[in-house]
Image (cartoon, rainbow, N blue to C red):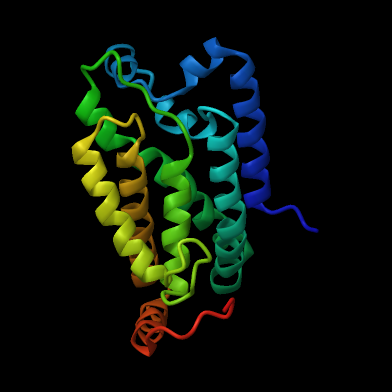
Length: 214
């Protein structure tokens, strides 16, 4: 098995998260804390917050999603854009989503000393939405829905829960990571390969088919 960027990111994230589990001081220095960004200029937190997690279940879920969908997106990018540019675009998609998805939380909580956030959810959301771009009617095992239907529902749910608040989950990161992933795919398609938009449209108008896991 070849070593992919996806595997490297999973490995680095898992190692840093494990170290942060054992070292609360390290975790507090890496997670997104908007007040520290505003008052002390610790802008690195926009990126490092995507490499630490709350607990093992949080880490395992995010890394599983990243591995499953990241490998496919990385392979798609390599085939369409070439190995070098494909890798650069993959990093721009994932790391860019980690950073951008934290911006709304920063703007909302920059004066709230009690707010903090962590996890790779923004990046993994972008990866999943990039997959939907290539395969809009591909079925997910859970929930058993076509990708584009799940994507629309996911955005609506994240938007609702972000406004509602109160559950200590970074729904802003889920929402904006997903939006970033969709916008990213449209932009790079327009710039580098407009035929991708035609491909997405052709896939979309074909409509859903019966899931192959039934």
